[in-house]
Length: 383
Image 1 (spheres, rainbow, N blue to C red):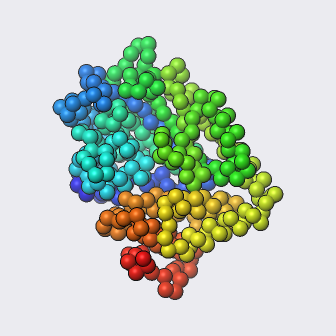
Image 2 (cartoon, rainbow, N blue to C red):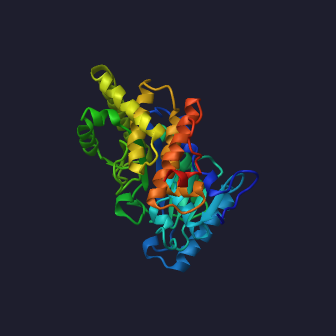
Image 3 (cartoon, rainbow, N blue to C red):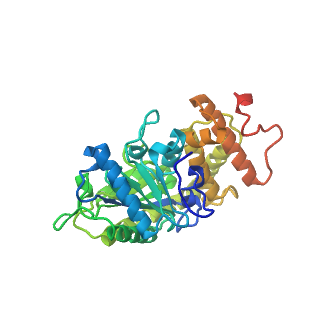
């Protein structure tokens, strides 16, 4: 990996950054995996990124880099990576950690867009994508239900950069963005929820229909266009025009709070009315993960969902929620390839994924690997 710049002893390698939101420390973290707040901004005097040429895109990158330096946001742990300077596996790794979009990193087998970059600032889990759909996408990603904290971080970064950069703004419409649905505040807030209780009690359709009727929308694990896997649902605001940022954040917090309560009630119903079925589902999932020799990503996510449910209902003592969060991310293809130190085809990845999961769960159980358990790097011997 190349292209990092930072200060002091703070890690600047891609694989060392972007996982603080997995720490299971936020409010309602057993149900709410993450909170994200994002602001879209564009610079005056430049066409939108989708129509900008290489010269404009590089000019935007230089101006933003200068603004970040002027605000001190790249000091004491801040870093800026240009996508073109990163290895393809590192670009994919950033995407798997949910801190860059697919549009920013470009195709797996091609070059990223000119001037595309990611900055992680020195002020906690906050940063910005440069030359994505909009010139700037400011963002904060935190564990648990932490909308106010995430909004506060992004707002502070927005104000700091706004003193250095001329944002495109219209007195009637607000901040101007490439996509008309983001015009106004430019704010998109989302919360990633684990809702197996509502799925198993068949109440999920009613809940999703309800949130759609109050101006919110739902998507899969990776946002727009992604599938629902592992009973994870990402809920976010649909509109950005006509309301203040605080109003949008408050509305999302209120509705998500209700969904969290519905999920808790659904889990209580399952535990009360079908305890044997629920316990069997949980232990089957745990047993497969502890002993499987090949696991696809979707299968892993669905099994982790059962274990996560069992853990929060006290049917399991281990592993920790943080460990399940980390497995969810580290079991993806780019992370497996970084761990293996080589490219993996689908079959190799499935074997290596199973080895990773067995290792992490064995370590959490306190009994280590069972006799004859292959080493994580011994995937060839288990094919």
